Image 1 (tube, helix red, strand yellow):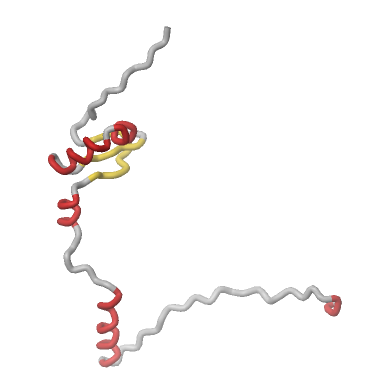
Image 2 (cartoon, helix red, strand yellow):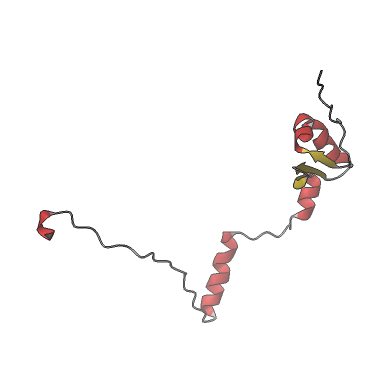
Length: 105
């Protein structure tokens, strides 16, 4: 009689989870990310993603993030200084239309 080998329910290395185990025990992965630190999830023994708490994620992001609205006064100031900004344009090559009328013969 063949029997299956039971996989361990616990990760072999602390903070590292196989994808199948992480899916089955997602609540525990999230809880450990909040209490113990980042939890790494592997796919085919290669690190795929890291689950971190919201607080730790916020620490890693810069507070001073620029938006498109910030670009407008900078461009206006550049114009006053004599800078000319040209937008980059891409014009794809277009084939001429094909004449399907009988007049083309």
